[in-house]
Length: 207
Ligand code: 5GP
Image 1 (cartoon, rainbow, N blue to C red):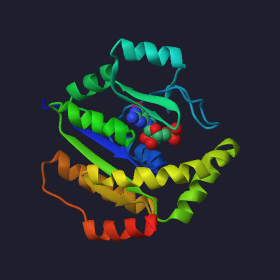
Image 2 (image 1 turned 45 degrees about the horizontal axis):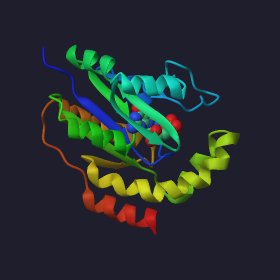
Image 3 (image 1 turned 120 degrees about the horizontal axis):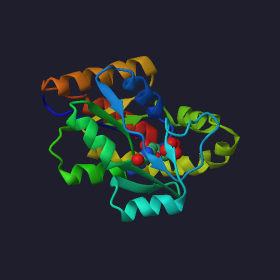
Image 4 (image 1 turned 90 degrees about the vertical axis):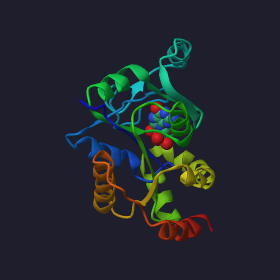
């Protein structure tokens, strides 16, 4: 039996990536990697399903025990992917999907694991929509929406590190596009995305 492939979805915060990862994980040939984080849970989040929520002490212990495949500091909190589960699932031939940032993606790329790696970068449809999404999460997050908009201008530049860049204008269309690319990659078919369209969209997002 052949090993599974690794699929990473990254985006500036608020581009709708977490919803996409949830939808993709419902496909029968994909499992989600559940990260550890030191941030506090949002009102709708469940420990062990959305994240494993741990304190700084526990996270730092896991770092010294070399338990992480990758980890990074994002918005002042630590986030990381543990090796054990991911390698077990890949070994069983399951494809694993990761919702991680560009720092973690670069760490995984540079490890050059034997498993095929496919990376997606998701863009919001506009700055206005992004701000709306960031403000809508819950009251506490409204206070940091502006800070995250500033971060957006930096994070969006990372699109260049990824295999595919997709605009999340409409959830269903975006999901179908990603799904199609994943199928092609699993089946070893050549594929590509429209770079000119993306570059024009990026100009609008950053001007
Ligand atoms: P949030 O706090 O909004 O759930 O996530 C903030 C950011 O952390 C998102 O960009 C998300 O992709 C990223 N993130 C979540 N889990 C991990 C992880 O395990 N490793 C890394 N490097 N980033 C993560």
